[in-house]
Image: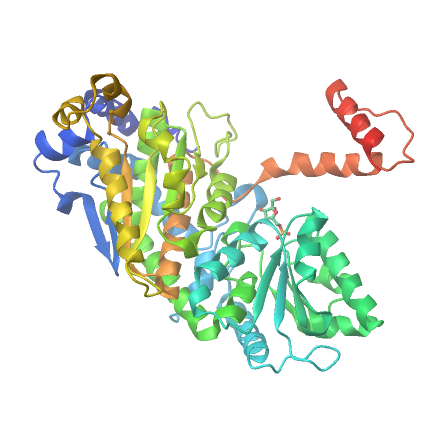
Length: 543
Ligand code: F6P
């Protein structure tokens, strides 16, 4: 039996503490009441990352109690169980070993008593060979032309990870290659991408863990037809199609050559698969060496998570602070705000990572939970978000704990863009924490009637995450940091973070509805009144 978190003594202590400090403000906590709340107590520097959590509604005692609570939920031994290859994804009977994919030393990981390191190395070498061949112009299309366009067809974890990483590391990419991503089963997605591609020089990567996903298979078949029509030969498929999957049988059935298949395994979750062969498009874009540097960054944070004591452990503290706000303050959402244009798809990636992992309401004992679990994750790069939704974060009725991610040194040297970007980055967390009082406004001689509108209450919690520069290495650290935050929270909420049964029902119903949308489907619809009406309206108006 796993513990119900809110029935532990440690949670109850936390709750008592919450009751005693909930009315305090960040300003008081930081500046006046508690002189021990110095930056040193509330920031950690590790392998080039500064994680500063001083602008939170916490005291030292909060952190002590949170860490005790994590201990009571056996976080440390659960981390060890993951690394030991135990089948912690119980409902799918799978181990969870994405961390082995970026192991760069000679460490051993096994599943069911068999080492998985040789498999990982074999596929990594295949990735290396393919990416080098493409980058050197040696991978030729059926007509003898070198490949210049890569189209990754996949969805969810088979799209968001490599897409986000390729965008994030664009500055390190080979600009002679164009990398595209097709995910949606809205045909416009693939049509727009194909319009930019020449069949002679295009390589399709079909990325799907299961190789059964409707969206991906529809787009893959469409791309295949587009290519075969052009060459008027199915033989062309071997020069232009690769597959990344765990389901080798289905790939072969689709018609992709065995030597063009790169494999991964069921102990790699889709949303944790960026460092598996799923990252091939990113490796083609930035090259093997940079990709390997990224793996090292991942590995550095993996080791930090695995070995650091809980009170010095960045992902653990991020997870605990998230728990503090989600379960004690009952704040429902969490914003992730990278002050970095290259990370513009990071919030979308994290939405899957976090919400598909921890959006659960059944605990590990199979009971309905009586507490809140995963928050709504959202965000946009700064400063764009400032001119869109920050109004609500500053003055709305909802409190939104936020992560501010920034880089000390810019990737591109321009005039003073970077100082302006970072001035905004620092200004926002200052404004959110300390706000602007009536007295301050009066001192500024603001008209009396306008004062209520111009007041900023402040007291909005933020984390500041600061790196030296966006490199493949620091990028790896960042992603791993959030992966382990998600793991931590799954343990605190006593839920299974590595399955995703909640996505199944919609898939089943869509399968049932698909034939009903055909114009010649004449049977009586068997859905509820509302759905029947909508389907009929659609069919009546469909050209
Ligand atoms: O439907 C959700 C999901 O299963 C995700 O977990 C996964 O990343 C995505 O679909 C794509 O799955 P696949 O890689 O098997 O095509």
